[in-house]
Image (tube, rainbow, N blue to C red; front, side):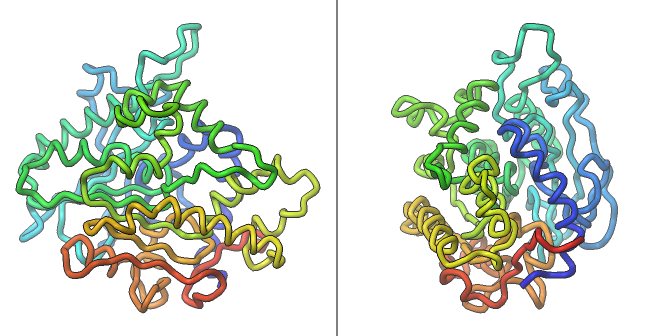
Length: 385
């Protein structure tokens, strides 16, 4: 169903997501590491973010980043938002999801500003007069240093999470996050809509693979990827989540729609691969797809499940793979946890994540194929805003 409460997001998405088709670096730069939990139509450059209590948390610029050269893509300072925890949550840390299980934790939102999922390196910066900074890895290290000094070093429980490009960053830095915290702390990671597939588009072109190759070369990302992987295959392959999860040792949860509209629009059916417009309406609304197109989408779903096969057999891992035409789902109450949230086996994403994090039960929820789930929110970009 198309949700009228998401029309504002639909309006935003038509304008901003289209920018992503220009190139992978721009794709990543257009996204925040951890999306705002407030109204998604608001600007991502705002200096505050809204928590469930409706308090606005100011942006803290990381001034000490100057000393290590940890600058954003445009040379500005990186920053984060921080709400101090209280009571039983004072030694627990969340980076960053809105939820009931984590309501009193220390909550941090890291601003994403480097263009390569916090994995770029300055050695790859252009030396021909351009003013772009590839300092993502330095930003990650600088923010971690700051947070450790604020009490993260004493964490009893911690959860690193991100959405889309932030989900990819979560996967890249998950084990490093674990390594910084006390050995007796419960530390886990959650990636939302960041499981980008290494799949050909409808014409057989490796569109996404080419994007990854370009950004890895441009920003020297290989230095932030797992060493075992980059010795076994071309480094740009190692930034794909399917390869990353083979080497992650920290407990991991994947939230991903089987029919991720962003991946359908940019991986499976990028605009350049549909010159005659046969896919025009389908790529904007799954409800407008014909039977042949649905068959293609089911194949894309099968590829996702195959890529997740290792996690399916990991006793500590968790997943929530629903059959919705949507992208990020952990940053809005409507999809995260509400009376109308998407469910699998009558469980919301929040309930599934809570069961996994607190070891209440094994949580590996995989939905039946579209159109079987009536609780789904299906984005419809063909409707007027």
